[in-house]
Image (cartoon, rainbow, N blue to C red; front, side, top):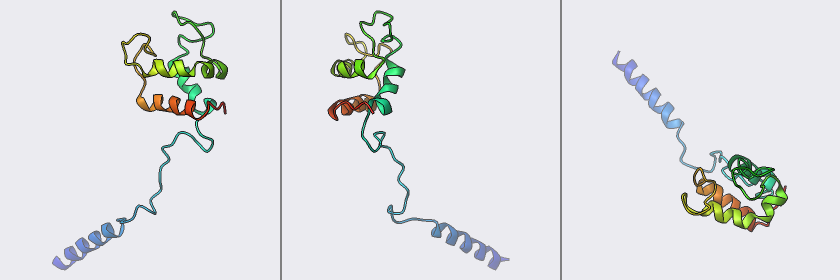
Length: 122
């Protein structure tokens, strides 16, 4: 009986040892870059941010005291610098956007990168 137990323990140890990986080269990398092959675009990245965070007030026509609409590429692109500034302010600061609370820094960084890359539409 002891021999069977020792053999079983050795087999289990061998199975676990054979499943290890000492190299990261053969591990599949999960893409974390939202930019896609053409970089950051309005249609691919920025439009959904605007729809989820801005068009509740910056709709067409604007609501809740918003002074302008942000519902299409032209409107967002022409005001991109002001949008980035408003998003970058801390919650509670004058004209911090959105009023419900500051967006995650990764989202703000994505908008900034879109601007830096030339505000591509698609």
